[in-house]
Amino acid sequence: MSLLIIHCPLKPLFEAASTDDGFNAQKEAFEWCLCETNALHATIQSSGTGTVESMPYADEALVLMPTLDVRLMEKKVPLVKAKKLQQVLPSLIEDELLGDIESTVIYALPQLPGQAGSQRTLAVMNKSWLHWLVRELDHILTPRVRMIPDCLIMPLQNTSTNLQEPLSSCVAFQRSDAAVIYTWHKTEQLGVAWIEESEEVVLPSRLQDIKPIAWSWDWMTPSAFTFSRRTDIAAASLNLLHAEFGVRKPSKKSTLNWFSNSGQQLQTPLSKTISWLDRSLWTKPIIWAQYAVSSIVLGAGIYTSWLAVDNWRWGRNIDISAAQFLAPETIGLLAQNKNTDSIALAFTKQLTNEARHKGLPTDADFIAMTGKLQQLKTALGKGSIDKMEYDGYRIDFEFKAGGEVLSAADVIGKAQSLGLMVTDLGNNRYRLQPYAGLGSDNVNSKL
Picture 1 (spheres, one colour):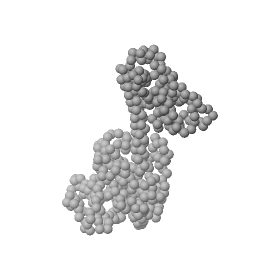
Picture 2 (tube, rainbow, N blue to C red):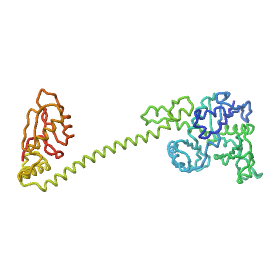
Picture 3 (spheres, rainbow, N blue to C red):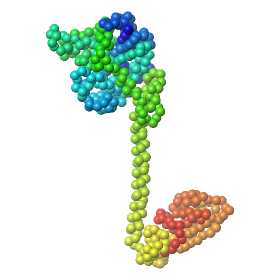
Picture 4 (cartoon, rainbow, N blue to C red):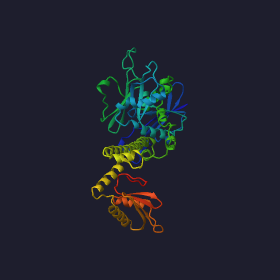
């Protein structure tokens, strides 16, 4: 059988990833090694650096993701099913992240034998970088592909000759330009990586007792082969690609085909798709937009209801205030239902009659009312009045038939612009009220 070991490139900085080519500058930075294996060991056949498409065929592939791009941490988690656990993981580590939780993928590593059920190791990765790696690895001519942090293939060595002491950790280094990248295999499922801007290999004082080893296929190949042949559940079921599949699983509750059809991805560079077509970019804004629209609709409904209640309340207060000053005769007419006037309108008529008894002019007098009607006719500029009826308080008028037709909206709108109150009685007949804003009625009545 053949084993293809792939060492992924490092994720570029944000400035480099935001260019037009996105992460595609790293397409030719994949390191690979093809091995022929048997039951005991692996033999290197060939190795190289290049794109995924240029790699040879193999029966299986083990992809090593740099630990610098994977943050491994131990956390206490609730004892729930895997699906429920995946939903609560973001809330468990959100306070420990420097970036946005929406741009992060979290994967719970399989449990170690003898480990407490609530103690799990979590792998935290950049979502965009993982998406890009998965799309690149889709071109591998291999039926079985696994991805793990590269620190996990590093041997846990013993720095003491006493075999009874526990295994200590291992540190490997790799030079990159003027910097040195260190990878520390701390425990069975924990590893840490960091960069030092130095040409010399210098370990922290805490790790001075560990002899660092340089990354090379000579020791990586046997270690990777040994890891690939482990049968314990913690190692055999470990695959960071499962985190990507969990992220891209379509939602059954989505009503938008765009979101439910998440498997259809455009084969274009990430920099062109992440800005406009990536699902994760638009999910949160659309949710907030739905909240905003719902809030606006709800607020408009509440405000309209409040206006209606407030209008009724003020009308009620006016009627209550006016009722205190009604004359007994007016109260008697209202009690006998001899007219359909409101209390405020009845009070207004009462004051008008009192002013007339005192010889004072009012806006309801015939001269004042005809002046208003003439003002309205002049403003309309067309149509002539055929009939006019004055009941001592208001004027009902009718336009002459056969002339230019005036709509009720035009007549009422023009009257409102003049500060007059006109109501439509139908059949080209209208009623001019003496006072604007005090209500109207459609029945001829007198106090």
